Image (tube, rainbow over all chains, first blue to last red):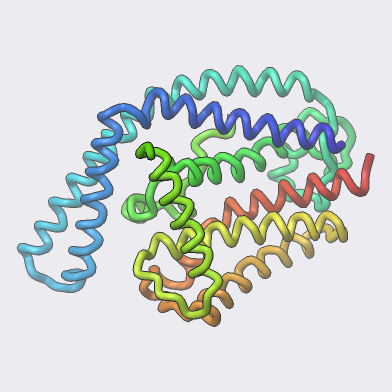
Length: 183
Length: 123
């Protein structure tokens, strides 16, 4: 089982690096992305400061100013998603093809044993394409998804590509940045 | 010296400085992101170490999972309230600090736990 599990970790490191590399090529290095990123960070900081200073005040002028910055931030965030979208499509296609190839290679193979029995709605994933009803047997896809969740996020963070906390906070996401793809 | 090399050295220095600060009691954290990064990476390390231990012992089932979740939350809570004694409100409250890197650390823990458990106790 060592060889299968290590192979899966290796595969997910490679796909994470490939994904980040492609995104860098198509998005991160472009001038438009960098400009938008700087702008979003600037206005997020500005908004945070304004809100801290005048959070509870009923001053109409301040409220209007805050609203204006919020509106600008929204537009910038939308533009940023549009810039990212193009590469997401390309990466999505590439990864769907790769994943189906790996799925064929590991089809019906028990790659690991789980030290716990997953809850029913995870069993569809953790026992995918496996026969029998021993639900502690783990399929390729389950381990791959877990690896990707952990490795991709950490690689993004190490390379400095992870979105900043301030931006996430303004966007109101609950668990911070999630890897955009499991495919 | 090239600019890139200079940048690299500067980066390494700042990492060492942060580690030193993180292991010193009651450090000052004017840069909030720096402290949140410390919490983030501490969580990842705890996840990997716990996964390794849980797999070797081996701990199983809901007990193993629950113990990790509690340990992860409690250790970091003790770290920022007792060891660093920061004002949680400055960072958006205890919840904000507790969820920093939690999901990623859980994923890392599960991967490590599953791999070591499978490798050591099955063939």
